[in-house]
Length: 552
Image 1 (tube, rainbow, N blue to C red):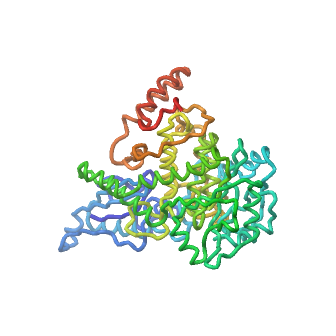
Image 2: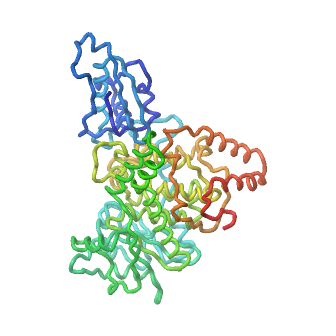
Image 3: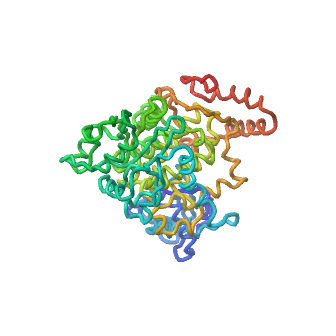
């Protein structure tokens, strides 16, 4: 058997022969440039890996070797496992070598999205569906305290921010440049969310570079001071532990000292990122794939993975941010170290909790574009190999998957309040790790501009919003809910996302049929069906530990 880890895109692998009994035409010289790029998406294998070969102890003569057979196992980024039965051991080994050679692409511009050309889409479609200017106009119609700044139009102020950002109106661009030099990676505080009812704001940034000598930046202090009126208080939610923040200060980072920011109170809510989170993901997938273990062993491995603990921590921290804004009527600044990972997890999740517009299909896409893609989450680094790779890449971390899992928890506890279904979340997971579209390519807007992603690849949003596709992702039970949705984060309320982690292990046929029938009833009948039958179903699908949605 030849085992190739960390491959993906099961639909694309069909064209390369996911069947038994026929040799695959995978010799490098026989593929066009586009076909090589497609294969690199399907079979993204780390170049420093050696396939796990289990040949016979003694190789038979060539004549006999051609008559034997072999199996190639492909472990995919979407967590599917494929097996290819290849007649002829020599042929099997050659194909395995070709797959390995072709599945690693060094250049982003050689990836499959640059070659994918569907007939139903135009290249320019979808890239400008969610401009920041449109989001700013919504805020500007309610307050004049914020402005849209192009201080980063050439990416020199902050290489990981988009060209335009929303900042306090009282702060000029020159002050922003000074603040950027005081924040790690230049990520100065920018507006993430404006609360329309009470006028509070949620900002995000990276850590201040106070260092061991407690350096100060008057412009930074002034920027945060302009967010609050006299006598008001704000909260800094630091996604690191107190100890981690202290260690960061010794190496040049740090936190906002109370003496310099007297109106801001710091709250530490540590969230794992990087290697610990990736190891948690790997352990969970390994446990889910082991169908031979008994109940006690399964529960032990589920607990030791700590994945559900990460989900609970993320939801709890997002609820804290939402509570500060909505109930305490206090503004919030969220940051960790770099401000590109757990910071975005908290700000995006808090908006789903607070804002009903972010719970619509279009609004959720706009949130992802604004708070993950344009905000500079390094997708290329974080979503490189998924859970099956033997290589333990330092930059790999499933932060975006953790966000999607948290949104799924919300959809389970509030089955009427989200316009989109689980299918959208699964599609987003698949495309974040491997896609025919350019939406999740690169690590930030600057890299996407350099690679001409928007000029030479198709947008995922254009495809998702095609009428024939869009209806596949709608929740048939959706009913607009203008209220804040406060999830339960009790241990018994957090459940394993079986639709993702068991997707390829057990059939979802009966559940799919049930949802199809619900869709048929909702489309074919009137509101009482949706209101009564839907609510009965929601009680069975919702968390028994939390109050049902119609009682809240």
